[in-house]
Length: 266
Length: 207
Image 1: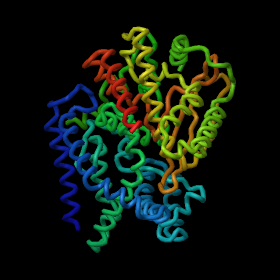
Image 2: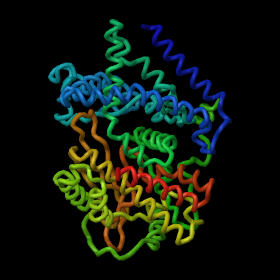
Image 3: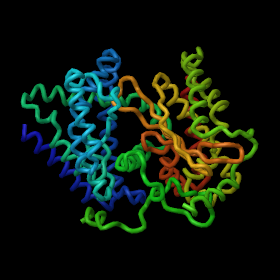
């Protein structure tokens, strides 16, 4: 089991390193995406994998299983995830949220039949979205280059490191009975994917270039998550008005790299 | 903040006029329009049968008067907007509006059975730029999707200039692909690309 983790961990490190080496080639000049050539190739690989295996299975899953069962499965994994979400909230200096997350796990594991029913949400304990990448962001680490990882998809340099910790601390990965663990891991991927099926067509139709649409959406989404849904406006660039004739800001680019950003590049 | 208000004032000069005057509060406006449109989408027989054009017509009639597409397009185009001639700006706005309406229609149709929760709304008297926050609760999903509307006050009432889904602005998300198109083919290149995109979407919906 440990070996599986090590290999996953090292895969991420290797990809991050490879991404770093490839920096400088094939780019259309987006400062947040210095390794666009590599990323586009990886994006294509992930899209292919999704099209051939993951999406068809998720579609089948969604068609065959009654909605309440799908909800139960999604809730089950959501409850497990709440554990580390609570830890991350604590690390981010949000003890009230962390306590609420712990309360959610307690209530949902007991009254909610091992997490199958999300009783806590109906009791007003809100579900949060946190991970180690966000915790790093909260601590002031800038996101670094955008990277598309095989299987895992879009990340930033910071979120790639965060992901390594997320994978390592994932309770599902620590299930000792290997066949059970594998079934759980696969089911979770499918359940997660099934939730996104409706969004597929919308993205497909909305995007002029799916790659950059997904990239920019990911970067915006992460920024929003780090600030718990209220990102500061002035650094965003979306608030600055372009029909103004005196000053125009570049899309969300900080004027100077911060020390943390410089450190990440080394 | 002061500077931002100044920018807003500058922007308001460029806005289209003509819509009827109304002074509905921004949160009430979002709620009324959402409720009305969702009710129609849920009950209309043609829409239930998959008639996309009917949804688009509905959006055009009920939703569009409350959107400021010129502002949206300017935000999406970014710094190149200034270089566009008035005719190009109009063409860009028209094409981008078509694309956004289509996206929005699709989203509404796909998520029509979800419940919308309106988050508490706070506004100071004299505010001219506000965000109305809603949450979409999906039956099978673990967490609701945040759907926020940015509105600005206009002489003709409050107008939406951005829609933010789960922290992602539907408008500024186009910025980098628009910039690439403009770099490769100029403003006219972007207009052409948008036109082609809309035409192909229309064709696939007709099938």
